[in-house]
Image 1 (cartoon, rainbow, N blue to C red):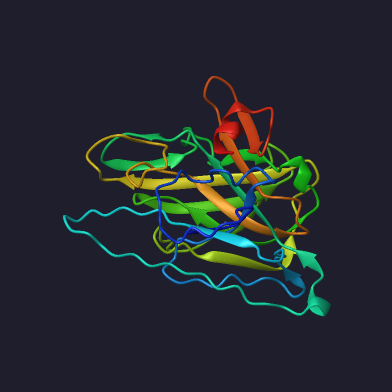
Image 2 (image 1 turned 90 degrees about the vertical axis):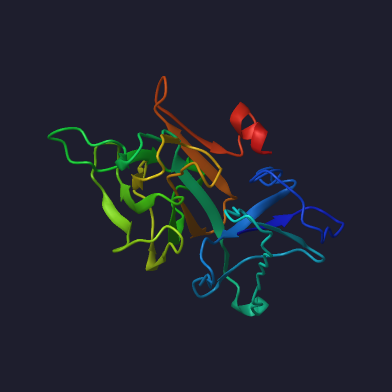
Length: 260
């Protein structure tokens, strides 16, 4: 479930099909506030940190689901925002979503991203921190995979060769109820540094699996909450043809324009 702040002015109570993140990475139209993959979750913001909403602010709730039965299944999802006194508000929370799209796993076997090279420790794929977020304070992270996922690990690192320091490493991690890890005090990424992301799966589907939004495809992502808010960022890494790292919104990136 994803909760957005949107610029809509008319309530639309009837659920309709949609594309993930559509019209929500254009600051003029809206921005994601939070994501949860758990049955029930409370996002805990640090003291003095909150989310600001304009008068008559519209909220969009987006659900991702799959019905594997032969019958219709009713769904219900809700969110509740807890108010805080103006005098207590110090900083606004921001949101970042980051991951690797280079997923191709053969059938019936364990797979990891990046693939382990013989004789070389697998320290994960390096992704630079968005320059706009330099110096912000990250206080919570959640790993994200689909049904064949077995683990997500995240570290912060000074550069592309630094193994880094773990900030998300959950024993017995469960894809359908991924833990949110809180940091008190929050951490910052080293100057000009970034994140390392490592994902594992056990593909028992009977066929190969690639990256995709479908529940039958796979993902390797994490989302993070930070302050002070510098705007939402959705970041992607790929080594196809060459190494590319980019974050949306970005008016000069054609992939980002499709999400807007």
